[in-house]
Image (cartoon, rainbow, N blue to C red; front, side):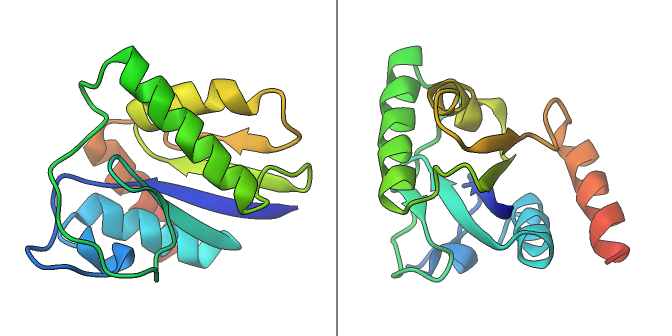
Length: 145
């Protein structure tokens, strides 16, 4: 079984263009989630409110101010449909794949409903945890690896 980590973008960003893995590095939560993904999962991607599915070492992108938190249901559905298409194009919606969301509800709720009829498995290990609880969750697991 192949595991793919999906880490949501964050409000905190560098002030200059950077690769996705670096652009969100000012966020401790993003840093911990991406470290965990690199150590545990086979591969990982960033879920960007603006740019959709990003490879961590992809081309540099400009800082931006956009989030799905507070977006309308229609905006979230449209965003999720685009992510779904990109996951499909990347051949990540297969029965031998588990998508592991390291993201808040705004970044997975609509997408998970689209994934139900595919063969892909879904995990939400930090579902319902507050930011501080998520940091603790990652710290416990990163330290023990």
